[in-house]
Amino acid sequence: MKRVTKILGVLSLAALLGAGTVYATPSTHVWAPSTDIQAYGVAHITSDIYVPVKKLDIIDLEGTEDDGVDDRPGTITNLGLTVGVLPHEKIGLEVGFDHIEGQYPLYLNAKVGVPEGAYGELFPAIAVGAYSIGTKTGGDNTVDPTKPGTDYNILYAKAAKTIGNFGRVSAGFYTGNEKLLVDEKAKSSENGILLCWERTLSEVSENLWVAIDYMGGESSVGALSYGFAWKFAPNTAVIFGYVDQTNDNVLPGDTFTMQVDIDFDVFKKK
Image (spheres, rainbow, N blue to C red):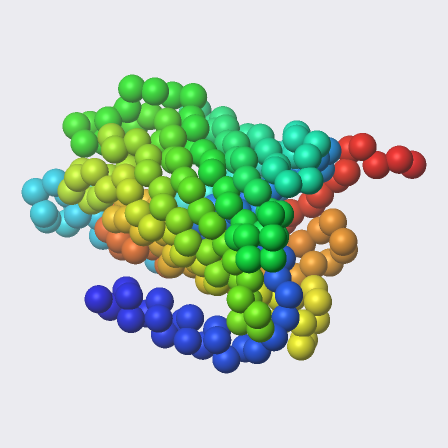
């Protein structure tokens, strides 16, 4: 109930911010996946860092604190590339990969969708996608969390619509690998809702974008996130955000994040 109250409070504040158009860094908002898809021939490079903000007292499977894991987790880095590959105005497809430090660092992603207004003024943006498709299979955190796999295989569907001066809202659902997406008691928590509000604060600058997104669940992907982005150039933006993890007893805990996003039109004529 506390989490729901927090979400409603933040969204109420968002409603007071007024008018403006919206844009989002494609593929995700601050943390959760978005309905945005790279245009055909556009390569999107992202460099993200996530810095844990506090030490964690991890709860072991018997329900007591594990004194062996009570320090602040290390910084997480991610370098990714996503490319739009479908030359069609009313349906898009992007494919890509992420390199996240670790023994098996490669993760794949893909998304197909329809942009807002493609089939009429009231038609929402719709996207279906997958990410965190890892290359190491066979892990089972419900049995032995010391030997995890990387095939989180998160699948999601999401719809988004701009609502006048309020901004753009989106909602959806995700599911993933029940053996890897677990809580601190190694209980599966592989499903959850997806919510987001986002908006360009044109009263300040057309380059300033803000977002609040929520990803349900008690595993490490469940979080309420909020942040803003500044567009330094037509193809370059930097997001600054905070990822407030739903379950404080799973790694990595709450994090500050900075995400640098650069787009290149590989088919652009010189």
